[in-house]
Image 1 (cartoon, rainbow, N blue to C red):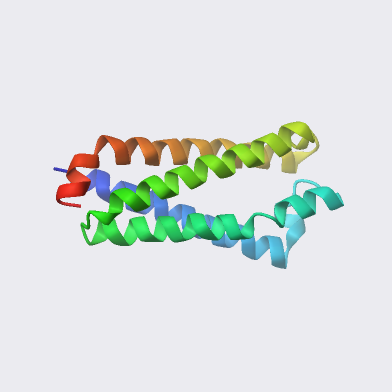
Image 2: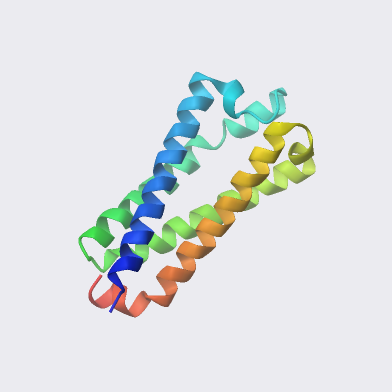
Length: 141
């Protein structure tokens, strides 16, 4: 049996992640200087490659939220999909940031580093919670 408080906490965390992602992309396309860590053409091209992948992550998180609310056995699929997508995005982002020294360039680099850490902690936490509760998720959602 899944602890109800834990279920609500995971739903709230995923909801916050979706809101943050939507806000980030709204700022990226509407007020880029607020969230951009660099101004080079290569950095902009790299970031512009992420909306589709982040949209998939958002779909996975929304699927997990909805299926957890409904106590559906599909929630395990969506939780593992969302956690895996987050780890993948973390790896892509960190490799670029390290190769191009983004973290150390300016204040935006520190924000980028924070985003990377939060993405990893969130994604691994989601995977860990889902896997730890897999039997209950498959039986009672």
